[in-house]
Image 1: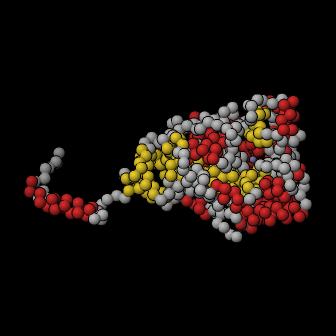
Image 2 (image 1 turned 180 degrees about the horizontal axis):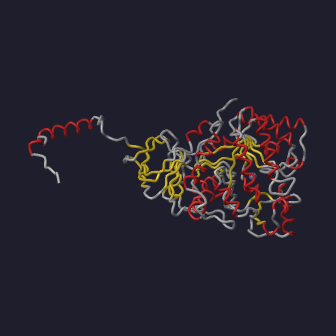
Image 3 (image 1 turned 120 degrees about the horizontal axis):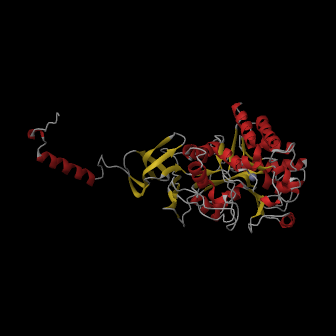
Length: 495
Ligand SMILES: [Zn+2]
């Protein structure tokens, strides 16, 4: 009602406009235009940016230069390379704390599943310096490892096993001097930058409780976290997962070494809710204890390992028909089990009830970690599909948890687990100015795993773009070959 038209006389004279335009052109010419926005190397426009640490969940533009996030803005940004992310989620890149596949083949599957940092913390390595040197400048994603009690015990006990023990390291108690030598090698690994100490007590079944405590003591001196595959699985007293968790909780409480229990649902099986309760109680009394799970109903390990020693059916609550031979996909019988146990090799155990897998994935206590590793395309689908499966199946289809909670378990929680031993992790798992530009852009309506127990070597779908240190490793859903932006994640050298 009150619209007035400005009188002609208030307009700026034409000559003044000309002078102003001339001045702007002049300033731009000498590169000092005050109003010009900076140009970033990469800009991601109009994505739904989710940062679980700050709880940001909003449409934003992100500017990236020099490998770091330089701007997060509601207004448009200019970039030399621009990605339009309308309808897509922009998340911190996923951090996998449990990734056995540490080679080119596996890093490709990791990248296509949205993982920007893949760490081998359970089995770990026996030679930290050599392990990091092998990957320097060659990796598609960021990498890192613990110093592992398993490989150290294999070396000290002269076991013929390579990845897992098959001789004395599994079946023989260590002498006092052997324990001393293991402590020395673990200490050395930590000095060389290992991200903690890995354990697979179930695989080194003859390691005494005292031996394990001694290793925790070495870790505790540096407050290095212990990543533990526990001594027992399942429900059957007295050698069950509850007692196994008591062992490492006690070691954690006595020594002060932080504890991370790996793949809780494949150890707990039906008892998983009880283990989660124990971890929650320990946390509420101030213990530094965390855990992780993978989103599958089956395990995978070596058939010749101590896990399939006599009594496995009762311990795991499964039988021959629940075992699947990785090389052929066949289900086993008593006869084929005995045959393969002699030759050795990888076997899948369909042992985790679906409701237990879901409880573990949805629990606020767990991080998501794959435990994966493919070899020439063979293995467990978790090696290629873990992260897309949580987002597609457990978040979108089953609504078992929110998208924000799922991303928290894949990004900031694993970053926080490591940031005391490796302060560089404070700049990962977050979308914030100054953080590393490790980012995963995915379509929440379509993201899904495609790998199966029969065909594990299938890339996930719906992961559109993945950047590691500001470099595209996946772009428009396609793997980018010929780049190696992955960097070592390690503790500061304290030699
Ligand atoms: Zn394990």
